[in-house]
Length: 90
Image (tube, rainbow, N blue to C red; front, side, top):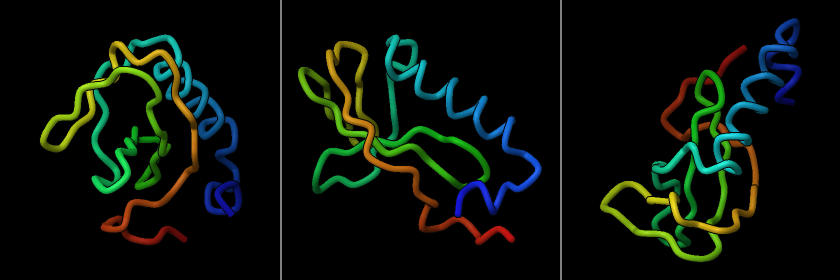
């Protein structure tokens, strides 16, 4: 579905995905916005209303509406989701 929505832009989508995952894994993304406060998941923007949802494992600091993952040793990448307040593409 994701690639269908961005048909003709697959290379751009793959590049953005690679950049976001690299930032999560190499620690260059130190802060991420909270995705769901109930389970401490975070989210980083991917493209046009889509985010990469992850769960930090190891030390992290829980802020009001962000998660400081600069010292996190492990992240579980969970999903790519459309933000609830984002308009549907088409």
